[in-house]
Amino acid sequence: MTNPTKKYYFRSIEHFVLTGVLILSGCSLPQRTHTIKIGLALYDAHDTFISEFSTHFNDNIKESSEDVQLESYDASGSQYTQNTQVAQLIDNGCDVLCINPVDRTAPGKMIELARENNIPIIFFNREPVEEDLKQWNRIYYIGSSAKGSGTLQGEAAADYLKTHPDADRNRDGVIQYILLEGEPGHQDSIMRSEESVETLEEKGYVLEKTDYAIANWSRQQAQTKITQMLDKHIELILSNNDDMAAGAVSAYEQAGIPRTERPVIIGFDGTSVGLELMKNEQMAGTVYNNSNIQADMMFQLASTLARNEPLTDFHLEKDRRIYIPYRKITPDVLDDFLQEHDHPAEDPSSFNSYIHPTRQ
Ligand code: GAL
Image (cartoon, rainbow, N blue to C red):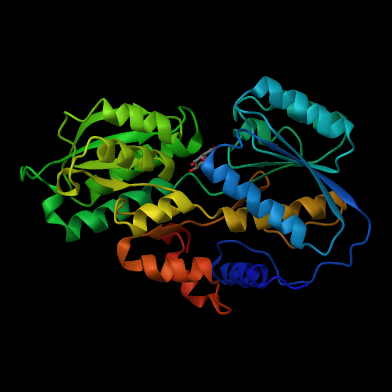
């Protein structure tokens, strides 16, 4: 059965070939008959972005014409638990491991186990450091490039501030802001926090950091932290993800603060949570972290590795990495984005306009 969504993504990917962003040739895959078994290890299945990623990955398997078995585990934030789960996946005969590591700086044990058993690993979303990716030539990474992500977020904030001068509520020519940060040490928290602020400054905005909060990607933690800051003058919240942005919105809602007295809130991910906030005009911008294409690509790579087929159809960057581009979502492109997101078009040419500018 042909999946129209998949057709669209693969046409999109072919389009990226032309732009030099991501190369997956249009060659048809060989006829595949024998059953393969994929092991999936999630750092925390309650994370909204990861849960959407995992749903897309499962959909790929369900819609595949290949005979694929999936065994998946949730480590609930414990690297120790994940090490045990990966050992179990290997014992249970998985042909390939798709791992979303809890601690991206400590995948050593899992690599060692996989290597001893010659089972390839695809790490995803939480990017191991270079030394670990270099440890073995059957380790891969799929995600979006952390570098450049904060630039797009800064641009989304700048686009909004430019057209809404009232966002500087005390009219002092300075934007008082706070950063809502994800997990410390996560490649995405680091780059989004740094680059978003730098981009706004490069665009001429004078910023004053009123405060910051680490909320570990969590809506609840963000709500608690922002509730404690409600007495501060905040004009802009740059949140490392949409869930924490949603927590900030809830803090203002619960306190009964009218929208005109709230800061501009910018998120990241374009999850269903984030898109809902955009539709309700409670969030002024976000950046789409395309879990759909990432999951699709991971499935294609996993099944190719599991069958020991050549990887000639994949363009791998340094240390066998595949990066999927982001898209900036601002209120003016929201309707078009939702249209494409909910009803993928046959002709993806408009997709190009959202491709990461530095990677075009
Ligand atoms: C980021 C994503 C966050 C969170 C995190 C988990 O890429 O933006 O929302 O899911 O990954 O590693």
